[in-house]
Length: 198
Image (cartoon, rainbow, N blue to C red):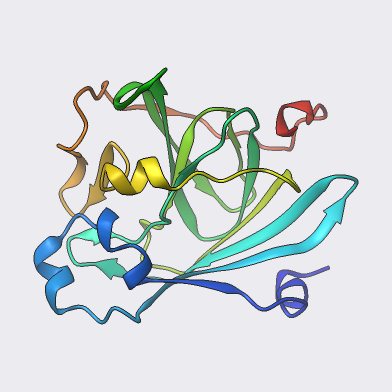
């Protein structure tokens, strides 16, 4: 079934600027921006397979002042996710914190994805999708139906450990330890073994 047909099945959850104030890099822009501005649309549960859920997220072409538009981002405890780029181009930024140390990141990397690319989100990593292309981005994901989302550590640290801006990657000074950022490659197909999603 086509994406446009799938998303007609459910009402989207809309993430607005007011929901993301804490994580926006450009604080000067934020002062005059419309708090009701829709940042992205989440169509949850448009399909399912056994105990897995299929969602679609749309990030319109948009700038948050100096920063490229992004998702709020969240951690998963012991489960992973799979993302598939349906349209557009994305950076998926992943970060892992040291155990018991919210402000100390032990690993940080990003994956550049284009249409058809598959991106694996490992368990215990926070992840953030960034639309860097100034064209609409459509992403799909498979996740465990009862997958818990933890947004609060990201909010407390005012976003990911790196922001992606017109000047490139910029470290978030609210973290005490940030490792160098490296690039990893996407997969070209979904793995056969999906046990890490549970």
